[in-house]
Amino acid sequence: MSLLIKRFYSTGIKNRAIANGICDAIGNTPLIRIGSLSEQTKCNIYAKAEFMNVGGSVKDRAALYIIRKAEEEGKLKPGGTIVEGTAGNTGIGMAHIANALGYKCVIYMPNTQSAEKVNLLRSLGAQVKLVPAVPFEDPQNYNHQAKREAESLPNAIWGNQFDNVHNRLAHFETTGPEIWQQTNGKVDGWTCSTGTGGTFAGVSMYLKQKNPKITCAVADPPGSVIYNYFKNPSLPLKREGSSITEGIGQGRITDNLQGAVSLVDDSLFIPDSETIQMLYRMLYQEGLFIGASSALNVVAAVKLAEKLGPGHNIVTVLADSATRYQTNLFSKNWLTNKGLLQYLPNEYQQQLNQ
Image 1: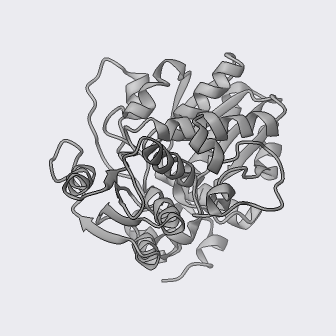
Image 2 (image 1 turned 135 degrees about the vertical axis):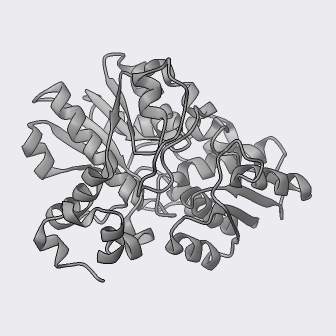
């Protein structure tokens, strides 16, 4: 870890009564044991409560590392501009940090993302540019547009979260060590989904370094190529379908994920029907108000526990809360249009808005 990042980002896993500004408050999130699922699987199912970061998601860690590294390298100077292409959460983390450190923030987002995230970014003072959702290969992809904007501005950086490996480093140096210490080194399995690949890759690299026997399983939603990449590596990478999850799933192997390809022991496909069931189950059985990608991660943790058998410790990540998606995820009409209402028990359906 660089001296500059060390100065502003404490990696000591401890209870801190006072944080030196919001940058120092990022990380050191609780590890929650999910009781009902632990009883069901006869394993300990643990989930890292990343929604408790100051910006509300796991992406705060990557945002901080990307910004601090740019400062350290002299690419971002006082009064500069941070430009990023994001499905929302990385941008939200960057907007918080930009406000704290005196930078401007410009965010490019696909116009398919939730209104809650767009409105939050604007409330934080970020300039939000919504663009059509097109594949990465298209020059009009939101990431390429963000890069061009940064290159056109003086004293500006493009975060490049998908291929900037300081994203992965954030999790190698913070999330992974936190999990190791919180479990006293008793980790048998680790799983989560990938968007940029930073969380999965960084944690996998750290845990495998500590114990090569830990099973690392990548979780994937419909419409993503990652599951097939590991299950059928000879097949071409081709997106088919879509998912209710936002910010995860990929059509390519990012630079962040590339570093962990050799560490992947298994790949788990999680259909939207199982994700939505788990999302409601976690709310009404555990009191956890989590987003769809977090629910998918929990489903994956259960599947991995069932594969490994009773008596194992499985860890995953609660990437963010449902507050950024509630207009859709708790709408009867939206769930019906997605063909998902039928998967919810009647008692859950009765809680829904039209």
